[in-house]
Image 1 (tube, rainbow, N blue to C red):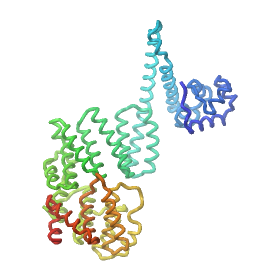
Image 2 (image 1 turned 180 degrees about the vertical axis):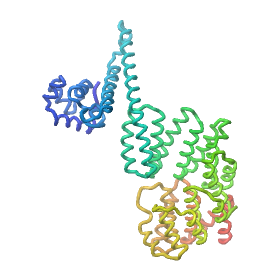
Image 3 (image 1 turned 90 degrees about the horizontal axis):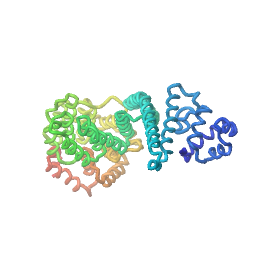
Image 4 (image 1 turned 90 degrees about the vertical axis):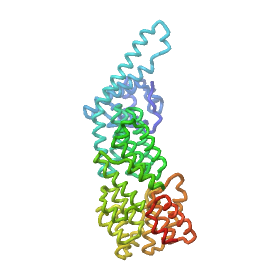
Length: 482
């Protein structure tokens, strides 16, 4: 068995050894012909026996030699890591023993001896693998704790470093629970980096693990909620609804009453409201009540408030009086009040829901308040020169920000208002299977009414059609347009 030397990094490690010891010295200490040493150092296939000799006789760290992990020499590695490195080499030796057995001999007269040797090699391999797994498990768990904590603190630079370390340790650890935690953490990391496609990929893997393991239990339904919520936030509404419905259908009869099942039912209803059917959405949200879990009650209550607002059953002040909780609810109420373009409603929203941070969305709301409520435009015009920030974003977030930017530019008379509006229009035209939020589309068509005479009919049809579907919030606007 030989080691793969194709990578430049592997050859770089060999060059490090050649710079530290002469080829003659390496040959003498490893009991290898000098010509062979030269051949290995220049890209020839290196047998594992030579690698083992480097470790035993020159003190080379096998983890560093094989995968570039850790310090080059065992003398620079702490005792625990050194033991693990030695076991890695033994593991390679055990794998080599299995690979080199002449399995064709099983039909000959020495088949019993060959079977015993094969069994011994496999037992040794399994024992070593179990030992490495046992040693790496606590290290992997601690890394994942630190990784998650860095993400919760939004320390993405530290999280990037911890991810690299966790990826290395993950190769050595077979613990299914830790691997699932790792993929869930990778999903969270991707979501914070705004790489929602990667986030969806890792969340899908976590869900598949649950489905192939314990099946659809309550923990599995929580993973479905996380995945469906990410799909929804990425404007993949049809996929999110289908996922919720499938998971609920797969739950046992007893599972239909689980708090997580009811939460999924509410989420599917909320997505239906965003999709274009407020009646079906409200029906699902109401059917998912009462929610026995206090942890989920606020989320479902927020979804109910959203539905009642869109249906026109309550006005904005009534929605505020219903006292929804949480940052997602606050953001939703702020966004809804923006598309009303009502100074009193937006002032009320800011007094209740504007967070005390320096995020771009918070700054946007502050400048919109200056324009819409206070009648001051100078600061907003300066802010618009850098809004939205140029960075990688999902299409739905790009659409939201172009629509919001168009609204602010329109209200304060910015010169680039039409360019912003055209960018939002192009994003809507190229949405494909994505469906942007009802609030963002509402704001876009209000911008159309103010900026494009040629498309007024299209905007009027949007509002009239949604009024027929149960969006009573458009009744006054449709009556005014008529």
